[in-house]
Image (cartoon, rainbow, N blue to C red):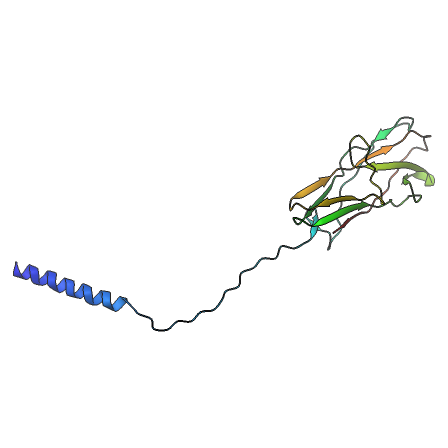
Amino acid sequence: MIAMLRRILFSLCCLALADGAHAQTFSQSGSATLGVRVVIATLCSVGATSTGTATASFGKLDFGSHPSLANRLTGQRGADIRVQCATGVPYRVVLGAGENDTGTQRRLKGPGGAFVPYALFGDASLSQPLTASAPVTRLGTGAEETIPVYAAINPQATPAGGLYRDTVKVTIQW
């Protein structure tokens, strides 16, 4: 039993010595700073393409194939403009007059230099014209926003058959 008490006493002494060896005291200290940051850019992007570095395409508005322009035609919605601007960034979308405009009228150009006038709209009821002088103005939400584009050709004399087309420049300003 005495041997057992000696072993316990010896173990307790070793434990006390080991604990004292690990417990360190510090008499001095120093400090510095660590900078942490993020830049939330006040910019806009078109789809996944930055408007500042590349040109994006929004697809095509297609009126389809028709034998006559005696009735009003509406373009199939397929060319929505997708814009993503940082939260709180005001922006506007300007649709140019097109490559074949007369100054006040967008026109599709076809065979032999024939033209078909058309108009672009921001709503399905074709009541909100999208012109170079009437841009779409919004405030960025941080999420991608869609600006719908619809088109119409009013009844008119039917020109020669063939493919008629135009290209409209879309400019995002912020």
